[in-house]
Image 1: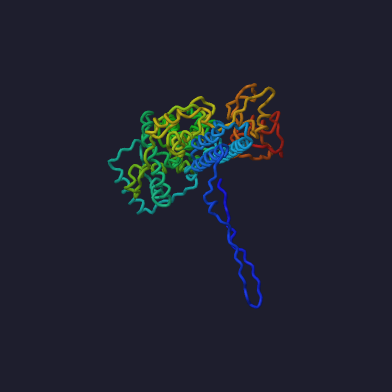
Image 2: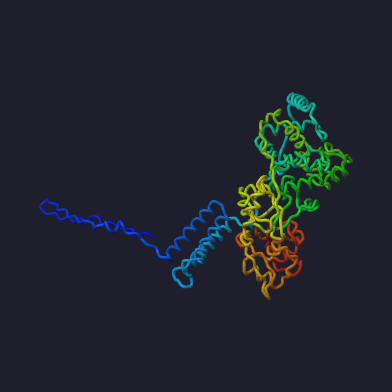
Length: 527
């Protein structure tokens, strides 16, 4: 802490008399001795200075996104007080500086949590399937249709397809659409497909499903792993919660395996195979994959025709489903030979990884640092994780690490003490406490505490450990709406509308029974 010395330069006074100005100069004091002065720091000042330097380095690492390095520097800043030859309990200045340091570190950690802790859910992308309902194709002029038909047939000659590929005007219209108006989006989908096609085809071969169906995500999600539709269908295979559950895709507060491109692909293969066994026809199976088997069954029953092209002429299936099969066939024809259709694209490199078992919960940012890769790389390989952490309700988790980084990850991770692997706050339940009282204390809804801690009921016991998310983090991943009850509505129908349960609505609104009246305002939390 050097002193600053100032030169008092010139004091000028003017006195005017008979048009004469007299200038008075005041010389500065001699500075030779001051220039050579060196400040000798005391032991206390050295300790405080060192801790400040370490803290500033830690702040710099946080700004770079290096969470673990920042924590280590903060710890070193604290240790500079605790290991000093001067006890902080015997020095007022050291105790004051130490307390200020702890306060600054706490503020930095809270800031880091609010800007992206493990409780903030990852974002999603718009799903292509939503657009199929609004896409209109028009009959091609006869000459153009004939020319395109001949060209497509010639291009397909000698090629091997593992499902029947019918070419008609509807299919040709979609080929033209993908080459024209939707060219840019289709190109992106072809590029994205490179990340997943190898693994998808491998799984489909194992499950006995035609490999050509591996291209189905071109029209489901454009191979965007975080795609989410208006109907809340998710992932590259666009599973809804109900169907995902049928094929053992787990969904809870911590993870959503409909986004897991490996597990969801396995589920999609089995679902497609089940649908084919039901109809013995791949076009009907594809239509059922889109609309649901119940709707296709009813369409067949009403028309008396188990043929996709026939039921597509009626009103018995929606526009999206009518477009689904010809759009897929068009995308398959192009994707099998893009250059022949004017697409000069370089597919993205195939995702490659190795699996490491980590104790859970562990912050993904720490995993990324230990693997010496970016957080985005870890998230891309593990899109099923809804938070920036492995699931807190599991004792361990198999995390995907970029290929070739497993060994360095294990070496680095082994050096990290367990208490530095997560940010979160734990609460030890005291006698007389309830989930409601704990929730009020921390500003967290009871249903969130139950979901985070995998509690079946509201019953808790003294000495139980509860994981507590911060209020701000919960707000960023949960939307609060007010529903005004209409005549004839029931709690069951309202729960269906918001994709929640009757019990949760009763809990949020302190309802003792299921009776509600028109005009009542209900608080609903949507996740």
